[in-house]
Image 1 (cartoon, rainbow, N blue to C red):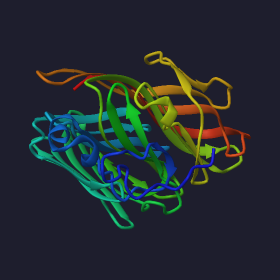
Image 2: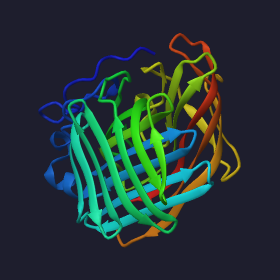
Image 3: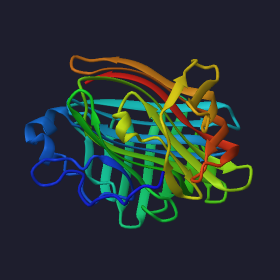
Image 4: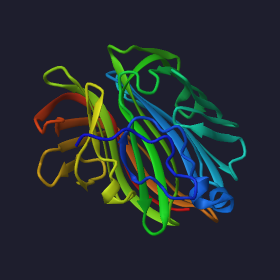
Amino acid sequence: MTLPDAPEDAVVPGGKPRLGVYRGTLVRAALERWAGPMRMRFRSKWWQYVVALSDDVIAGAAVANLGYVGVAFALAWDRRERRWYEREALVPFAHGVTAEGEPGAGRFVYRGRAGRIAMSTSGEERTVEVELATPSGPLEMELELAGPGEGTDALTVIGELAPGGLNVTHKEAGVSLGGRIALGGREIELAPDNSTALLDWTRGVPPATVRWNWAMGAGRARDGRTVGFNVCVGYTDPAHSENAVWVDGRVHSIGPVTFEERGRDPWRIRTADGALDLTFQPEAERAANTHLVLVVSRYRQPVGTYTGHVPGPDGERIELERASGVAEDHMARW
């Protein structure tokens, strides 16, 4: 489905959200107009997650302000050495965590005992810097992503979260990527011809308890085109779904999906009409059960390889040659 251009504001003056699925980048989320300052202070959730994909590595970094707690993590799966790197920090009341700005101009920063994560978007420049100590050794990243709209459409979704929530998300799959990742001293060079990136910027006021499945990936089709995809069940209203496919950087919307999640065995993700049918093979996994006074989170987030097919913008079947990414099964009470 062809998407309309994103509006400047997700919420108009007076508090009414512009519910919908759009192509392009918002200027302002403006959720304060809908929720008010007190609800935004204690109920809003705000994060950015960037994932780098190549034949050598799957690596990611995220910073989140969840109100009562801040969360920052970085991970890397060395596909050649079969070695997993991960470090997570939970920070009471988000001390040491910065989340500010908009999808096209913002900062997400963590500084603490675990090290440092800094993600910045300013104009056409997007960078990710990571310096963390992990049980497997030091993890460093210096990533440069193409700017918003530079070759890859943004997907913007303004959707309701039942009961009584609202969410704004900006996602891109198949972003041009360069830089380096150091894993325990092993240097991996990334360039647009051998790597790509995924980006998830989300800000919302969700219900107190939510559970979802999510999958995002990118790679190449058998005919050489670049392909990316993002699908989710259980978070946003199906009427304003974030399910989408990118072909050579152009995004189009697709219908509802189902997940057959099987732990470390292959997952199956598909639409009812079979237009999208993906098998996800986990290679490594990030998982945790967090039980704090005000936050409970149980998640499994494997990284791995996708095979199968996705629909093109005209409904044609596009077979994947190779694709990688992440998947998630998550329950949160926050």
